[in-house]
Amino acid sequence: MAPLPGVVTLQGDITKLTTAQAIIGLLEGDQADLVVCDGAPDVTGLHDIDEYIQAQLLLAALNISTHILKGGGTFLAKIFRGRDVSVLYSQLKLFFERLTIAKPRSSRNSSLGEID
Image (cartoon, rainbow, N blue to C red; front, top):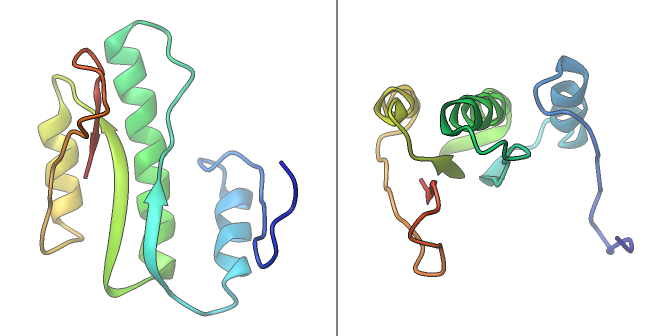
């Protein structure tokens, strides 16, 4: 991808502490109004495994958000719907006053993804 003015590109594994520290450090103490998590694993076709891995990516992004998101800020995330998605929703409700669940019209009916 070609560089964009004012944009810092960081490539790393969001579940690794060094990547989380790098992201937090890039803000230099500032806080974000919005954090977007569009993380998704390489899909295996095994829904339980795919859901688990995607949830780990989301929880890593949520962890970083607790350090960089302004009070009242927005955390927008893709979530794979599955058997245990209510547990994930409960975890998110611990950090946010409001939780909105939407499935974009452009998403396939068979897709597991939702935006929260």
